[in-house]
Image (cartoon, rainbow, N blue to C red):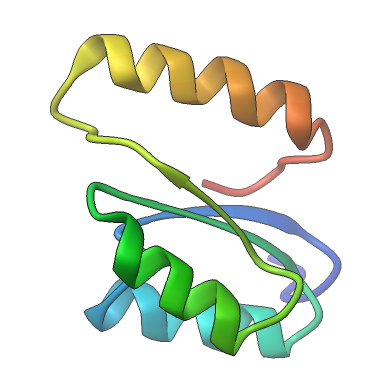
Amino acid sequence: MNLNNNTILITGGGAGIGRGLAEALHAEGNHIIITGRREAPLQDTVRANPGMHYYVSDVENADAVSALVSRVVKDHPALNVL
């Protein structure tokens, strides 16, 4: 996998391993999109890493996942890594 110039979606990107992965890949020159259930940690991560984007979404809710997919594909058509 090419580790830069990707558009990457990371679930759980507001804290823990997800945030660490998002920040590491962002530092390598990737366009990072993070998702999670709680907006505050997502906002903190994006604030600390200018250029990242976030969406609040619960992956346990099928309707929320469907809405997330539609929005991400529309907003970030270059998405190539999940």
